[in-house]
Amino acid sequence: MNIWIAGAINPVVAGGVGRSMCNMARELEDRGHHIRLIYAPSRALVHNYLLFSLFLAMRLCVAGSAKPSWIIGRSTDTFFALLVARVFCKNTRIALHSHGWEEMAYALEARLPNFIVQNPTTWKAHLIRFPVLRFLVKNVDACLCGTFSEMRYLAQKYPQCKSRLRYFPNGILKNNYRLQSGATLAKENPVFLCVGSTTWKKNISYAIALFAHIHEELPLARLLLIGCPQSLLSQEIAGHSRAIDAITLIEAQSFATMETWYTKATYLLATSRFEGGHPFVILEAMAAGCIVIASDIPAHREIIQHQKNGFIINGIAPHADARSVVSHVMHLEYDMPLPNSSPLVEQNTLRKDTLIDCALKTVARHSLCRQIDRLERILSV
Image (cartoon, rainbow, N blue to C red; front, side, top):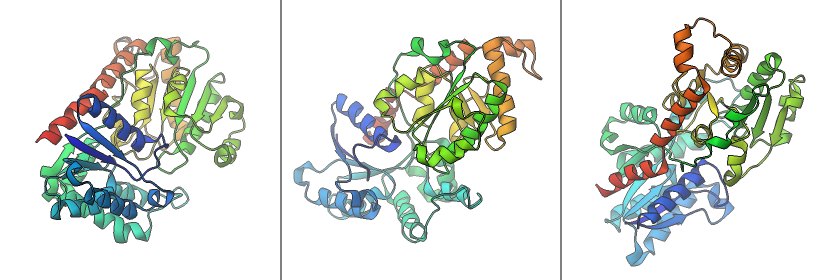
């Protein structure tokens, strides 16, 4: 098949959208498909989704005999391409690849205090973006959803689009570097890892507060914080003066070298308020042997089973969450008994090697190869 994968992003950005696009392209090319990655050619198109959509439609108009059989585009990126395809290129089908439906995020955003939401949804989104998304989900040939919760939301809100919904979660390369993992670090020095930008969705401030409480009980604990500019977080960290020397900030890190940091950590803190799709960072950390401690949100619950392949915390009370985390760390590292649990439960489920083995099985179910198998079946219908 001739497939275009499009996204209004800078090609050098290593975020989840770019990685998803590149991973899809690489695996599909290895299977003999002709793939074209289409990024935003200028900064203006990165920040204006409709302009990028118009650019993509123009590329389709001039493609001639090289017109694709499918265009896979994120969010509103395929709006004008869909119109062109319906009128002039009837053999080109459109797939909406939209991890994390924007209206779901807005519903959560509307319930949060104003001081938490740094970049609130604007009137432009209500006037243009949301209507365009609704039009797309009702008219594309396939809507690729990154989580079951997103599929359920869309099926309930837009029942007429049920037949177009397809489950297509993130997939990662199964790198076998467990033997080098942070799980083999000295027991007296647990290292926590947190990855993310300073947005209300990623909720990095909560991770810092959570670690500060953990550090009170485990003074030798350390936190590696990756992806946050120091200028934005210095004040946040300064509010936890006792833990400040135990926090290491790494402002920017390419995903090509993230393995190094996964293998330095014992535990991953994933404290997001909202995730679109199953987070790459959780799956990659699990593959490296890190034990994941994740906030209680739908996208996390789909891949984390509490006390089976990781731990779920409530994500809204750092002091209470810290007590829970410390009790599990003390049990895993020092064989300390857990409160309110039977010896049988501790012996059979709360062992570090058992947690890691279960996590690796989860990673296997989210391998890139398996997800591209799923995508090929969707596109071949």
